[in-house]
Length: 448
Image (spheres, rainbow, N blue to C red):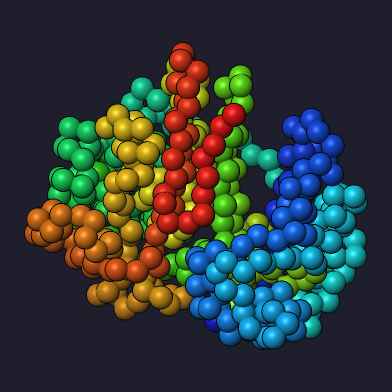
């Protein structure tokens, strides 16, 4: 099977985004379906200035996006040069695709002309995707997963959401530790130590088979449903206190094409949406179909695919969530990036336990998880066991104390392992909102 960095149509998976948009509109939408696409069509038609961030991403991916003529013509000007920051970037092929979806519904991408062109492009690159695969795709609706956290109730995605399981399980362990009494993780090495170990253990458990979990934490109910319970959380904390070693886990490259959207209406209703390709930006194959990027999401999930078999739905690694107090929403949260679980939990701690508003929360540094480097698979074990921190963000004295507790540390000065968080805090009584985002990617908080 292909691995990350290889050019193969076999790394493409059946897309779910547009089917999800159609399903949400069918269930909740009040405006005509075609109206949803107006702003996106206008932007694709008229263009936007190329941002410095996207210019850098394009430079790093230039060997991929110039491999095929249909992709090369999107990202190069008439003289053959790649677009640069500040230059007007138009996407007429994408605009035409969106117009067809607006007029013909999502069926255009699953049974219509676009579906035929996608299947042909994938097969031309050695893939096995068929029109039947696309036409048979179904959106799944699941019951949300809920946990208590102090005086709050935290609600996230349900069955099939690996990211929600990791985040909610981590929160239960944080609650069991009593971190508010230990001090903030930027000044207390003890708090920071617990956080790093909780993230590692929860991630390890979520990626193991039931047999492996039983060996890793003998005598503890580590079934998927139990991982977010108070009993398992206490036992996980006991496991940390006994200084037992973490299990090694395997991770792929960070996602670089994701978007979180939070919205609150005048009645206080909250929507929390997270979209991700779960792959490298534009995919290392560089396949585009009528202006739409076809990512290589299967490239670094080969073990999971082999375990669950063809036709199954891969675990969702995202973790959008809503926090309630006394039955009313008081916080909405979404995160992207390879360190999204850490960014989520730490920002929730900042808001719920330490009384920060979202702006103050995102100004705090975040841990970045095990060191991954700029490669597809985890580095050799000695490097991988190191916990990663951004240079200059955590006090050296705190990191030294963390090392004294037995946690290896690696300090980096790039942004290859970031977690990007967006949060909206609601005050139902005063009818006021406060919002903020991590200031490293293009983002916006506004209200009217």
